[in-house]
Length: 247
Ligand SMILES: [Zn+2]
Ligand SMILES: [Zn+2]
Image (cartoon, rainbow, N blue to C red; front, top):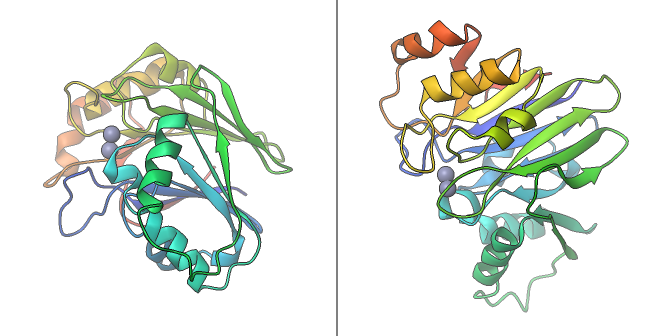
């Protein structure tokens, strides 16, 4: 059964408990990391993920709280003895940001595996990858820079999940999340480029999602804050560090 791990659940400005929002999608023998604004390898270890199963990483957008740990990710992949290629997917600005930052380091003495870059089109329903386990597509959100959310379909079970990444409520993300078993949506707070928990709940209700888990949450978030969101979508909760959701 596929599982989404919440490796981090915080906003860009975090608190002592939450690190930046990073996810891992795991099925037997395969793991896809999503974003690396912090030390994503350490968080994967904390989640009990076998590092040898990591196929690669998807970068949702160029902001530091989503790609700022990329060089550390590559360094650790090298140090743990990785030899098979590692794949990176993302829209062009996100890949470019990670690549530029990484190339400022002198890695000439590192014995790196092959790094393979896969640009994802910036349009609704853009294909990301399809394996024996998953079909993953991306759709744009509305944020200060180009950003995409992801829709994940488990080909063995038919289960579905979606991740909004950083976004205002928008029709493309509602369509991305249509009928999913699990929607992981940001709840940074209402404002340009972000959503409140109430707005995320409205997206989940409109999309017909079964469950809603909120991430990218700011310091001081409390469960009691969810009362307005629960009034429009009952199956909502804040995600917590290292939570895992089978879907
Ligand atoms: Zn962010
Ligand atoms: Zn952002």
